[in-house]
Amino acid sequence: MAKRIVVASGKGGVGKTTLALALALAFARRGKRVLLVDFDDLRCADLLLGVADRVVYDWGDVLNKNCELNDALLDAGAISLLPCPTDYGTFTPAQVREMMRGYAQQFDVLIFDAPAGIGTGFSLACAAARTGIVVALPDPTSVRSACRTAQEMESQGVKETRLILNRAVKRDIRRGLLLNIDDVIDRSEVQLIGIVPEDRALRYAAMKPGFFSPDAISFLPLSSIAGRLEGENIPLIFS
Ligand SMILES: Nc1ncnc2c1ncn2[C@@H]1O[C@H](COP(=O)(O)OP(=O)(O)O)[C@@H](O)[C@H]1O
Ligand SMILES: [Mg+2]
Image (cartoon, rainbow, N blue to C red; front, side):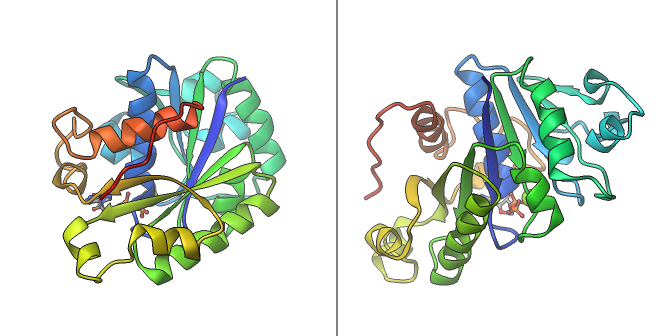
């Protein structure tokens, strides 16, 4: 059975799409066949992958029977992308779950990039997921909103939830400008699965494809998160 992971957060702009894509690429490096599904009706993943010009169909067309499952897939190099419709229409979680059963036959990992908040797009993104990743910046409001999102995921049927702290800056944590990792663990009921540092390679990912490379400081932390999601026991170090 394909691994099915939703990446979400209460807040916008915390790095969901960037990390969903980076994790997709990390799984691809591990030899997995990966499908990234965009559930944000503002559509970002196609731009980040540099395939925006090639989008013809989206998963809304699949559900409306305007095209077959495979017609809507875009080959984006190491991974495939399934774009989001610009309107959620009357699509239901049950329809999305059924559609994803089809894609799960051809891929090892499905990653669902949710929009901000806990509205319709979020529910649709959670519909077929078993694992939920919530992304937070290392500050109190972001962590609280991520924890709340994790609870919401569980009520949508997601079985296990994990937290990624994104854009961590050691110097600012030491100065008390950002939460330290122990505080995050204390404040959060969600198990921490990884810490991704502030990284210029990710900051400029939209303008500079190929950002997920071994030279980037976020490469090892992201690869380790993919390993942990596959059940490997990789120590979490950030000091
Ligand atoms: N670890 C990081 N280091 C630096 N910039 C980051 C990092 N993660 C995300 N960003 C930047 O943060 C901004 C928002 O990211 P995005 O993935 O679009 O967020 P979301 O999907 O949560 O709205 C983007 O400009 C992205 O490049
Ligand atoms: Mg996004």
